Length: 43
Image (cartoon, rainbow, N blue to C red; front, side, top):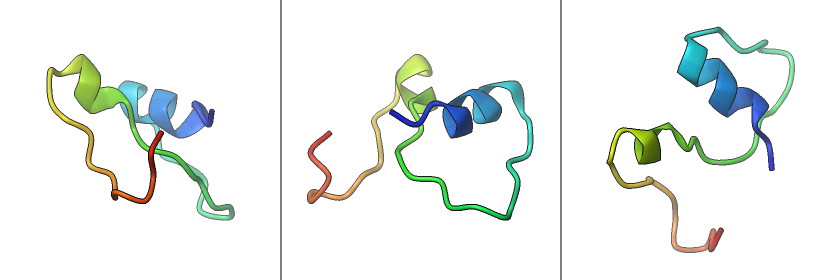
């Protein structure tokens, strides 16, 4: 579970541009919204 991008989004911090981040932001779940992910990503 890659939590660094999610935590950065929650606190409003910028991510370094010199690496690739995988995963889906969980922030919409905290805002009572749905996740935006492709059908090929079951988790």
